[in-house]
Length: 197
Image 1: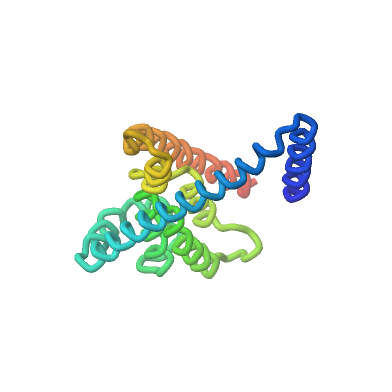
Image 2: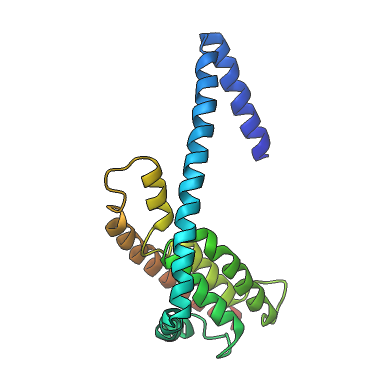
C-alpha cells in the first residue's frame, strides 16, 4: 500500500512539474538529494565506527560490565519475570547501553536477540509476554542520553552547534521513558485485575 502511495506522489509531482514547466528543477533535486545521501552516509559510517570502537574499548576495560552491574537492579525491576543470569538480561542491557548512546543501528541486533530469548521463556508463544511488552515500550520511548546519530546528521548538514540538542534529548528521554514505564505498569495492573474476574 505504501508503495502505491509513494508511486502516486512521484507521478503527481512529475505531472505538476511538467504542467509548471519546472522539470529541470526535479533533475537538480534528484542529483542534490543523491549527493546529500552519500555525504550523510559517509558521515554516519565514521560516527558508527568511532562509537563502536569506543564501545569495544569500554568492553575490554570492563566499563560495560560495570555499567551492566549498575543497571542490573533497574533491569530486574523492569523485567521481574526473567530469571536471574538469563541471557535475555545481557542482551537487554547491551541494547539499553547502545540506545543510551544513541547508536540505534548498533542496538537493533541486540534488541532482536533479547526478544528471541524472551520468546524462549514465554509461556504462551502466541501472545507477547509482559517482559516482551515492557522491552518494546522501552525501545519505542526513545531511550537516549547522547543522540550520536542525530549529532552526526547535524554535522553532515553543517550545523554550527551540533551538540546543542543534548539537553533537550535528555529532557525528552526522561519524560517519554517515565511516562512509558508508568503506562506499562498501569496497563499490566489492569490486565491482571481483568484476568482475575
